Picture 1 (spheres, rainbow, N blue to C red):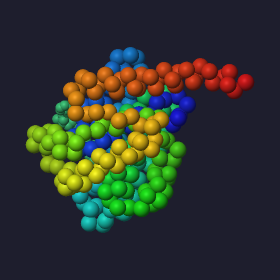
Picture 2 (tube, rainbow, N blue to C red):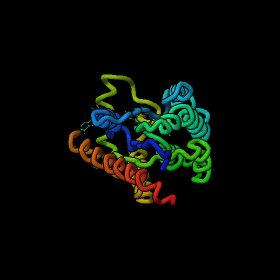
Picture 3 (tube, rainbow, N blue to C red):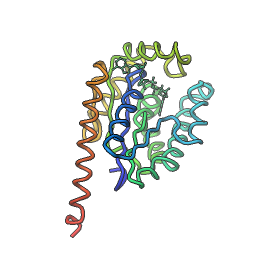
Length: 227
Ligand code: T5A
């Protein structure tokens, strides 16, 4: 577990899978139940990391290569962890994070062709022991996710550095997220994100509420275990 008090939940998946939508809904639901909730995102989430976000998503760092981008993602993540996530967990807050370490494994590692050892070494430094208790992987065929993202983008802003890439690259990312879930089933849950928002929200809420109950149970039995 990331911290003795709070609960750390990350949302992962391809572009337009519905992560932000579902985070908003879950936060609302948990606050309604009386929990303190922090919604945050990557790249970004702290003033330092938000400054790096612009450099990464505008494509300004692309000319320096994937390795440089991976290091910038890791630098932003470490600032976010130390300035925002770790303190929030220590206060007993539920942290809902839109993308985290698995995005670097997939985008910079698998489709950026960086060596797994390099990515894992960066991750260790970046997260410094703060690993999600629960990761919800929103799974959708790349084409459908991109279509959703494009619809929203036309009303909002132009596609970013990563959204612009080939469909085949996005499909590879989908497979890579599923592979992470298969290798870490205690932490990761794959959610079928092609369904209606309500059905997805209900499934996510039941997973997170189970995690909260388990965390409460562990907190209750921990003194006896320690005897
Ligand atoms: N990145 C990030 C890396 O390369 N390495 C890293 O380590 C990290 C952390 C971040 C980019 O940075 C890369 C990955 C990304 O390319 P971003 O702008 O933060 O970019 O964007 P994303 O995280 O990709 O998120 P998106 O905004 O594209 O998509 P979401 O949040 O998954 O989707 P959402 O909720 O905004 O929904 C998209 C649209 O679909 C609709 C929504 O209303 C919205 O219009 N929608 C649905 N429609 C139908 N049915 C449903 N169930 C729907 N749910 C949502």
